[in-house]
Image (cartoon, rainbow, N blue to C red; front, side, top):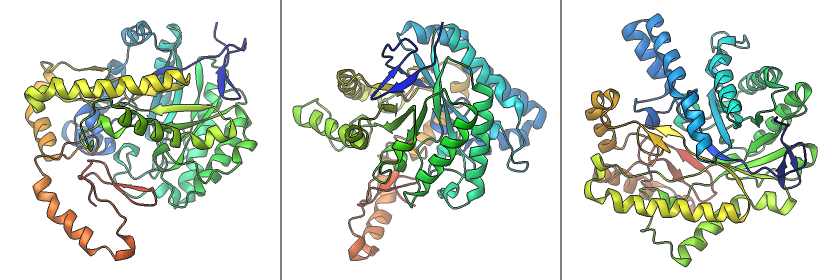
Length: 428
């Protein structure tokens, strides 16, 4: 029989006081679809609109309902449990629960599949963490908040924040009393440019959740894609039963890695320093830490040919070395991700599947043009982008020349530590 999990100092414990280390994966691509996970172009709202335009709203709604149903079933929960894992992070899109043209009117059908997967996992003894991955207006500058822009409008329009708080109130009402839910993750990877509005929002959403659900753990992501707690100060003193989440992606696990990963002492030390820096604020205050996302991407034979096995051997070593750190620290974590078309998932669709056979040429073109905004390899388009990168670097005023332009496939990195994401290879 499950008991509520709660935070005790730096640990998560069950009702008997026993430590519980949450180890699992994120169910990305499900109630928040992403292009690199499923293969389609653009954002989820765009592909849904495109399909409705082609086959009509009724058939499109039927298709996506079945997509959600078949994406995760009892067999998935049983397989997940067989791996010795005990927690699944469930990312969802606010659009399942309210409509931009009809805000603050709850779409109760949004609970259909979320409830179903929470229950399937509970039947196998698996906890779940609810993650608002896409908030109204877009809480970050990336594709995965489904806003369709590279401006995080969530932080400059209070009404978007108010709607998110309303939604969490409804979610907490619905799930209060469910002991198989390990907690709530109110906002995935915020990128608040002020670094302070995010803290104010967290104070408000904490109070709103606690007003209806005093029992569940709340997991707060750091700012700047869950990496920066430098402006949180001592706000944690106001919050009970709260953990803090960073995302620990290592550059060594991606095509943009500056060097071949050989697991040298120096490389492992660099990996450790990056990890320790992300959790420094929590460690200084004796707080509970959760690694909400991490993990490498993988080479694929259809694109990387004979080099595939050698590349993946490096990526697996990155995975192994990160796990060694986490196990040493008894860290709770959720790897990204459980299932996809063969790029980062623990399990993936067969290349002979009808879906991948149909989209084979399109997916190859996406890979060649490096248009997916995650883990892309810019080898085939670098010569096109390099003159523009050089031009931008030349024209930036001298005082801003600490700006680093890297063809990483995800972002521009600036000296202040902020990241401005782009759907193109590190240019805007």
